Length: 196
Image (cartoon, rainbow, N blue to C red; front, side, top):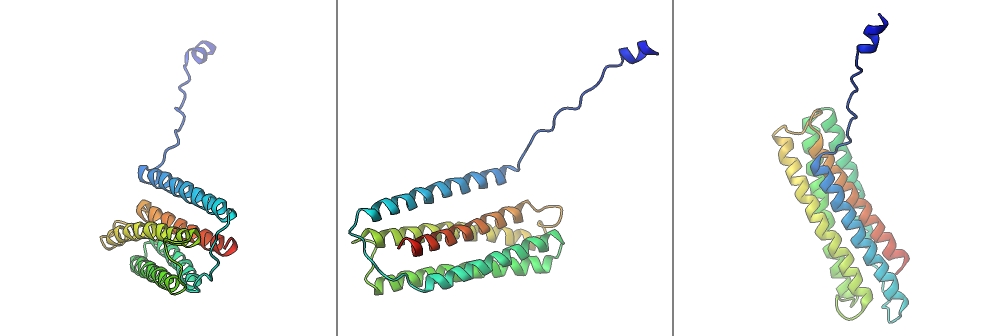
């Protein structure tokens, strides 16, 4: 009997490798690159501000309101995600549609913020304070447009019933990116208010 036990070879299970959906991996690389871009921009802002010749102006109140709109859109995006997990297709479509609409409202409010800046005689060219304001808000608006594009694909997929409890990758990607854009805007807004 002992010979039999000694002759049995132990088969080892292969170690499980950590893996990530390739689209999620690309999203996280994209998010890291955006964080690095805005970290560099906010650092440049602080360095340039310390040099002087800095225009003081009131940040238009519409930027505060647009922050609230984007926060609400994060709630509706979370609603979309939880609806997908429960296979509540009607709520999923409604929530993504509302999130998309709120994103459009946010962009419109950002444009109105630029109109207010012009009324305050704060232009893109002329003083670095104004230039940074336009660059920060413009770059964020560009990324938000890419977020709206991701939402459109998720909305189409939800109407085709491709997003459900057993297929959450697309809604997870959309939700992650949207929440990131919300956090990024809040960071930029409070940075501009505090260091203005």
